[in-house]
Length: 191
Image (cartoon, rainbow, N blue to C red; front, side, top):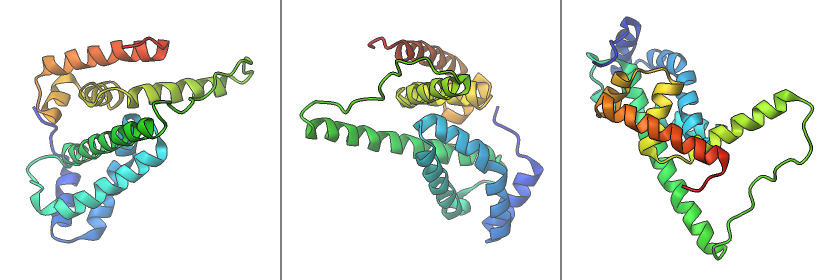
């Protein structure tokens, strides 16, 4: 079952389809925070996430004629964003391969582990969050997206399955594998 269309979204999307920029700006205001969180978790980088969200809204504006107002705007715009995130991940993978080749197989050094125990627990929490963000960003898209939609965006397996064109069982399996892979990445285990 897909997400029911919110009356405000339906009205705003219909107005935006007819060229009402103010209605579209309202849709942007309603959805930008959740889209940013989704993109941030997908990319592991705030600046990249911001760029992807901007690109998503530009693409949505240009594609409004194809939007079906009988459906909810939220899943439609999330689908555009997820496609942009996948494209970004593919481009990043290609850039990383080229960089590795360029540097003769020597990968650039990662962040050095801090030997000193940090007094401020907030700094430690931010470091853990950065590690988690990076680990999520390094997951294969087939695991990353279901994990983000369910664990971070709060969708049920059924809702995520509808969004991704999968079965709820497939979403459940991919989320399980994503969590297992995250544990390996965070412990520093090899795949």
